[in-house]
Amino acid sequence: MANYLDISALKELNEYRKKIFALREEAYKKHKIDILENDTLSALSIYPIVSQYDAEYNINFSRNGEDSKSGKTLIEQKASRIERKKRSGQYPSAGFQFHAMGNIVYSRYIFATRDKATLDLLRIYDISLTANTKIVQQHLLGERQKWEDKNKQIGRTQKHDVIILPEDILVNLANSTKQIINNCEVVRA
Image 1 (cartoon, rainbow, N blue to C red):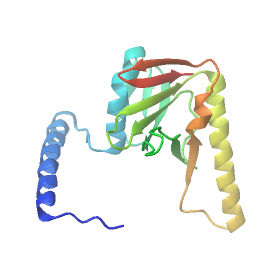
Image 2: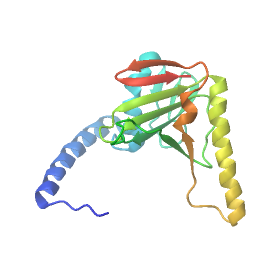
Image 3: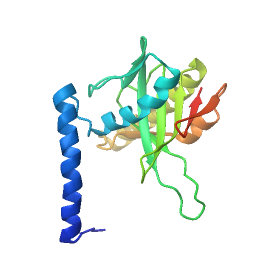
């Protein structure tokens, strides 16, 4: 569905863009980090929450490899935007996307859901207990196998290589604790 705006709206949006680009340029000149990249914005918004309970947590700004680390533990991070349902006012469960053939086995994962309109963080799942990371890994490796099986069945490699970890898997992990930090529910398991 097309969405065209009138000239005054386009001019107004362009003024916002100019302000955003100026801030991006200022940050880039100082730190050589593009704060407008999706992964960077996501990681920077997660940092103030996770760093409150993990003083060693730090972000990897490189495009390849792990997303963050704590001490010597490498962390994979994923975020998903979800929209509040109009009828119930509730948020649906999210899905976290991985590349089927990417590195999906880590000893710690951080999954975040955010409101699609405001980008506010709603829930963070910080998964580091071995039994729980194995549940995540088993699901992802099973989805990878299904993807590979489909490739064999159709006789070629699919262009769409996304596999999904449903939030529902994370909701009832063993030995989880919950707390609210900066209006975000943090589940550590």
